[in-house]
Image 1 (cartoon, one colour):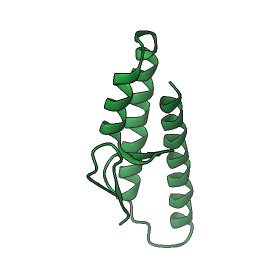
Image 2 (spheres, helix red, strand yellow):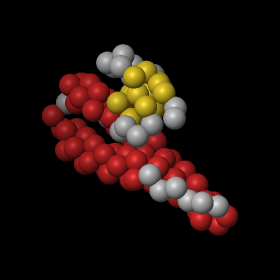
Image 3 (tube, helix red, strand yellow):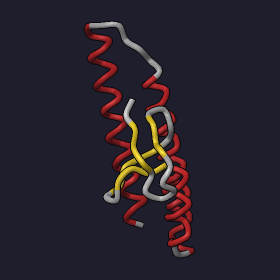
Length: 100
């Protein structure tokens, strides 16, 4: 399993936890959202709320996909493709939150 360090809290981040990557590096989802929420103006809070829920859903889905252990062949290929799709979506959501 991959291990990283959260740039917000300096604690370890491991595969199986909800975390994401920003330009600054790896960050726990909760640390990222808490830090970002403090910096936002009132008019951006609803957009932030919606994007936060989407990111949480995407990261939960990624964790669920990690727990699927395909044996071989087409199933393994399909799993890898779907994992990459969800990973990309989570990255795009993280970027949108970062840009708020």
